[in-house]
Length: 120
Image 1 (cartoon, one colour):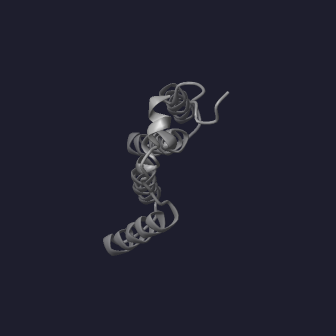
Image 2 (cartoon, rainbow, N blue to C red):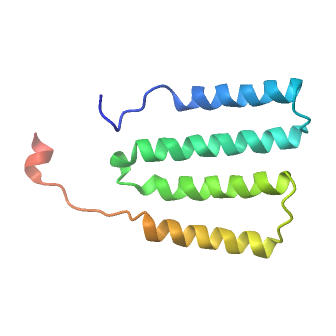
């Protein structure tokens, strides 16, 4: 099996996890609807990162940056929903740092393909 191949459907896995979160909240966790929604959004953002890393050879890594930034934003929303008291300036500074770190460590490169490889 190719390592770049997705095994299972990411949407199904995310739905299973979201359903498990809702089940746990219904029976055991004293969470509000807003907290459940933010946790589910973070789960979906994590699934987006997983898909971006798994399929990075298709788009040469271009979707990874957006997926990580989306996950970071979802994580900040999750933290503030559960009580992290951050100012807008702190959140913006954190997102700026994460964006720069992603740009430094995940580089998207483009290189022309060999004509022989394209014909084969």
